[in-house]
Image (cartoon, rainbow, N blue to C red; front, side, top):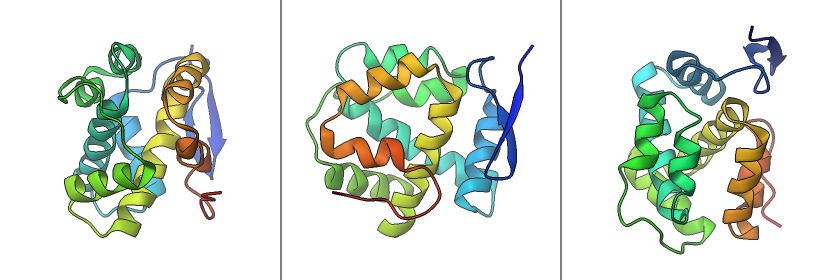
Length: 152
């Protein structure tokens, strides 16, 4: 049985107790990013996960995708080329372009997506993700959706 816990005043699934389903994942991103529609949340998720997949080596995107519902994991699998070095600024530029919003909004939406992702996959999967990314990405991975993101 999956246990629930409360984060930011919203009930979510315990990442140690089971996989978050697609609707719950999108709903959490919509709520935390304060997006007007589920469609906007879907776009933010797609933009962030596809860009993240471009930055991951070999099977890392596939391994992360395997812990997500099929509809979400798909965004980690469809991207080519498989690995590309990019700075955090490049990452945010690509998310901004894919999401077709202003950069501050895209940065905040990506933070929300990564926060929900960290709750949806195992702690081991998040640790492997951290190891794959350059140190400059740590603020994105650890910032969460509240407060300012420190960029060292």
